Image 1 (cartoon, one colour):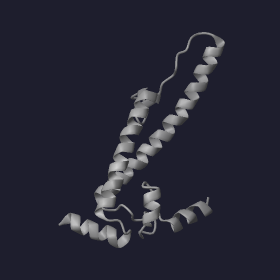
Image 2: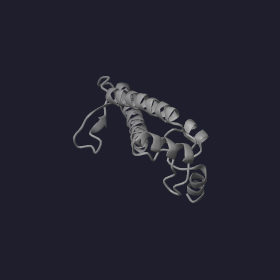
Image 3: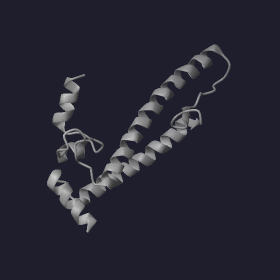
Image 4: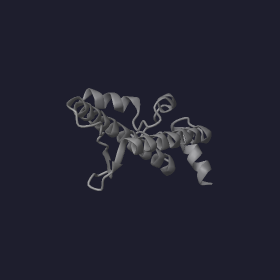
Length: 138
C-alpha cells in the first residue's frame, strides 16, 4: 500500500513514476560505489579527520623535482578528495529522500521539482525558481 501511496505522491508532485525513481536510485547507487572506490584509491583511513579519510601523500623520491611533484600531486588529491566527498554526500542525501518519499520535493518551497531537472541532475534538492533566487542573493 505504501508504494502505491508514494507513487501517487511522486506522480502528483513531480510527474515521476515509480520506475523512473527506481532507475534514478539504481544510477545513484552505481555512482556511489564508483565514488567510494575512487576515494579508496585516493585516500587513506585517518581517524582524526571528520570523514575518516585523508588524501594520500605520494612518495616519488628525495630529489627536489620529485618532492615538488609530490606536493603538486598531493594538492591535486586534496581537491579531488573534497569534490568526491561532496558528491558522495549529495548522493547519500538524495537516496535518503527517495527512501523517505521526499524525492522531487523542493526543500525550500516544498513544491515539486520539474522532472526534466531531476533527470538532468538527479541530486537536485531545489526547484529552478528557488535555486535562481538563492543564486541571485549570493
